Image (cartoon, rainbow, N blue to C red; front, side, top):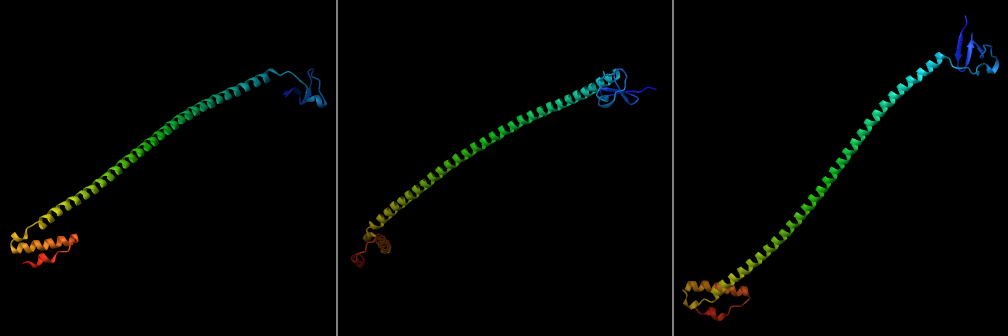
Length: 181
């Protein structure tokens, strides 16, 4: 029985390398002789790359789809992050506006309180002046009274009040008016 094996570029018959004519080849040329590829080997070689191409093309398609989905997801995340940042910026701006408004309101309140205090001080001063005027009127009434026309108990009362008024004013009562009686 005759066995032909095709390995690499050379052909072997019963384990011995042979050339194109079928003569055994010896030495270094035994494995390097070129021979055309056989029909079955060519079919196998053509079938194998197709499988690899279809497998690799399917893998490329899956990877491309994954990449596209990842890109879409990244784009979506980027737009969402941009929206979040815009909202945060708007929120910060609103907070700053509110703080500025509150500051203005507090300053206005402060000014109003200062005005109220000033008005209260003026009112107190006015009341003091009114009290002085009323006191002067009362003092003038007591000091201008004709003691000779009054009853003796009223005369004593008016004299004591006149003495108090004069002491408050720093005036020493004369001893002439007190000896009559």
